[in-house]
Amino acid sequence: MSSFEEKSFLESSFPSSTFLPAICCDGRKMHAWADRGIIDLPETGQGQKLYLHGDDILFLRCLVISSNAGLAPKAGIRRANRPAIRGLEQCIKRFSQNIIDDYEQDNPSGEIFAVYRIAGESGGIDGEWQLAYSRHDILQALHIVENGVKAAPFWAVLSLSAILDDVQKKVWAAL
View 1 (tube, rainbow, N blue to C red):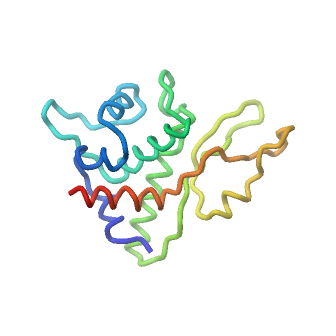
View 2 (cartoon, helix red, strand yellow):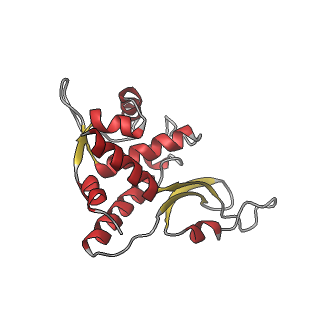
């Protein structure tokens, strides 16, 4: 079941001094991503603290993990067309809403994953992030085969449930 702490984390905003250590990112990298159009940051003036909501912090943590694993966001491509980002932000928004809804309806929520899958037509290889609600959903997809027939592999899997649990605990502990 979703916890009050998870729901509260997703609905609250936190200063960068609290969340940057929790997501293992420094301010320079975050601002470089913003300058390249990879992430959107609210306008702040000099001397003002940057505050982000929990779902944006979760998105940043997933970007850090993806980047460290070799799925780094690339510059020079419009944000919507970046394969390493496409769909990830929407997955996290839907995941966050699921957590909030499950808490409010007192429903149990299982582990939810963001899966980076091959997408598009057979003429080219492209990828996008999609939600998966069980390990079975992930493992039942067809994998890459030599001739590529009916291939629907995944290249990366992020347990959004585990990442949320880890990040929210670290952020709450830093307050």
